[in-house]
Image (cartoon, rainbow, N blue to C red; front, side, top):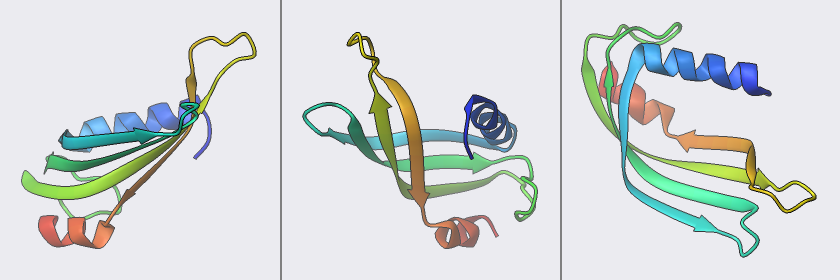
Length: 99
């Protein structure tokens, strides 16, 4: 998915169906700060059914995950902006926990 509206829609869907907390976060970055990675463990509650997924009834789950970011800096050297986010997790492991 590309663009701020798509990201906002994704976040609304996540907020509507899940309550999550990330723990044990480890962040790494290249020297320029343009490539960043984060490894974490998600502790969550699946409280409202998300379209196309099993019915939600307050199931809890614990799942390792990772996120990778491309950070863009403007030509004037200002603050970096996230240009890309890629998340990884094991969907089959999540389904096993909530099914």
